[in-house]
Structure formats: C-alpha cells, structure tokens
Length: 254
Image (cartoon, rainbow, N blue to C red):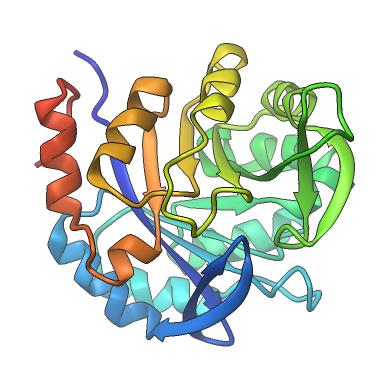
C-alpha cells in the first residue's frame, strides 16, 4: 500500500510570533504560534513544522519553549528547526517534545553534524532543510543558501543532497527561495531533479497558491507538501488540499 502524501503547515517564528514574507524578505506578523498550531491540528494537519527564522542569524538556539508548549497541547508529529548546530541541541528539542529536527545552515558549514545526529538519535530524526536558489554559480543551476536564504554558498544543491543522504539524513525539506511566498506554484523542476537522486522522503516547500499546485508537486515526486501563507490566510484549507490529492489518485489521511 502506498504511503499517504502528508500535508504540513509551516510556521516561521521570529521573536515568538509567526511571520511570513516573499522570497524570505518583508516579514509580516501573522499570529501566535500555538494558536495557529492548534487550528491546524483540528483541521487535520499530518505534521507541523516550526522554523525559527532568526535563530541562525542571531546565533542562538531554536525555539524550545514553543516545542514544549505545542507538544503539551497537541498530538501531532512536530518538526522544529532554526539555529541547530549540535547534537546536544537536538537532544534538548527531542526532550522538549519535538519528533524531528530540521537542520539547515549548520549542515553546510559542519560536514560531520548530520552524521553525528543520525548516529546518536537515528536518521528518522534528521530533516535537512535546503533553501535553494536558482543561479549560475553551480553546474546544476541550483545553489544552496544559508542564514534564511541570505547568504550564497557556491554549493551545488544536488551534490549537497547526495552528501547529506550519505551522512544519514532521513528526510529532505526542499524549499525554493525563488518561489517562496509567490503563490505561483512549487518549483517542479527542482522537485523532479531531487527525486531522481534521493531515496529518502522529500518535503516540497515554496510557492503554493492553489490546491492544484499541491497535486502537481505530488506528481513531481514529493512525499509531503509544506505551505505557510495560504494556510495562515485561510485561502486554502488542509481539507481542500487532501480532497484534491485524493481525487488525483493519491493516498491521504482523512
């Protein structure tokens, strides 16, 4: 039986509030993270993802208090990321109630970090968050960025995908900076390219604007579909996305 396609609301948190922008810029206040998480739990979210968008920039740890508050109230798998630089931080987040951790910038700068986390806690805990930008700096035309998309690295996205999978990554969160917040659709070319080289699950992120965009990303090879602003604004409901996926022949959890 095929695995169900997961629908995951993403809550980008800055200074204790959920925020959202376009192409990672112009962040606007959306609301309280626990209130939004509670709404998504009721609406049928398969998982929740909290990303502290300023933790890496401000050189501090991820939002442990949000993980704790969410885990105490809601029974839904929780991924937390932002500013994770050590396996000790991962242990703290798991103890606080997170089920998985999302590691981004630190995995680029510390080649051993992914392997350390996977060996200590298991690959199923490790979600590698890749903020990917199109450009001419790499042979593939897709470059990994860090610090919330603010810093270019010169690292080829597909070379990095192969590297982190070999190191023990259990899942890949593929976020297109070019599509992020535009509501023009997921970057299908990027999803298809990563699918060809990845045997681990792929979470597609960036660009959702219509229910059919989620279906297109699933056809492109995504195992899970992550979105923020369209869910925050109630422009699209989780129920509508799952209905469209089911109508297209995909397995979903209703």
